[in-house]
Image (cartoon, rainbow, N blue to C red; front, side, top):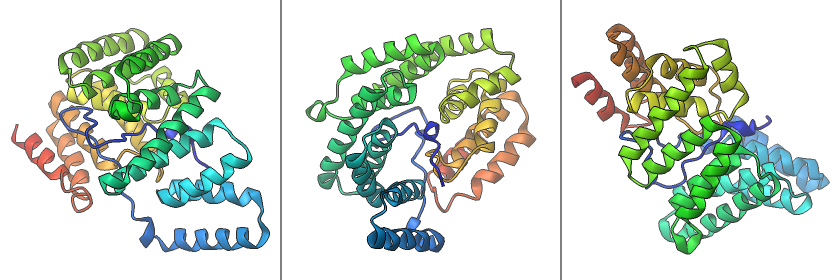
Amino acid sequence: MKINIKGFLFLFFVSFVRSQDSTPIVFYSFKSDLNYQETLLKLQTSFNKTKDKKLIDSIAQLSFNYKDWENSIKYLQMSLKIKPNSKYFFLLGAASGYRSLEVPIFSSTKYVKIMKRAFQEAVNLEPKNILFLIAQVDVLVSIPSIFGGSIDEAKRYINRIKELDPIEGLVAEGLFYEKTNDIEEAGQTYNKLFLNLLSIFDSCSDSFLNYLKKNRRNLAYDIGRIASDYQLSTELGICALSFYEERHILSDSIPLPWVYYHIAKLEKMKGDISRMEIFISKVKTYENDYPSISSLINRLIQK
């Protein structure tokens, strides 16, 4: 299974607040996936016998897709020692960031350091890659200065993103303000974002869908989530979230119940209560895996 690198915009730290309704990292129990465990064992056994370097990449990609971060980190590092490349540096940074959230806080330091170095290497090799640049903004704002965090440097990366793609630049800037708890500035930035979008695209047009298709995967979720939380264009928001839902795969970082929740919010904004109820019922099927979603749904129903 190959990794679609456009699929990742990562939320690295619990303190990272996107909005009123912070989106969690997707949950997946790779240890109970017998198909994954069997495939992993076969690949590892084959590698131990043959030392075929191609198998290192196969294991790295497989373990990343199934969110087995320790194995992913191990084999990505092995691959990068053989042949450095921007994609694998980025994936190493992502896997390390995720792993830092799973371990006790006193054990997370080494993963944070790996993450920071790996993302910087990815940007050094591909300085115009928007996905890599946005990841850098996330990291620089989220981690303490002792580990290399820097608000000023994050702003410089945002300006670079704006030069490459004004829409992505406004998304990055709005997320920056949210993460620094300046919700008023975030709201103003997102108003500019949607004015920009609506001046270019006619609601859920083919041109809008093609724009989403050619850009990083989580851009569709970001646009939909922003529309939902800041009460902006319901049509664009629902269109973007529906697009994300249709293309959702195992390795994606956004849990589907949050996609359904934001669609439900937007349907309520439109006044379509029956459609809202359809998506609320979809959310409820995930309550055991994501208990925090229950309070959000209850709040939505009671408003």
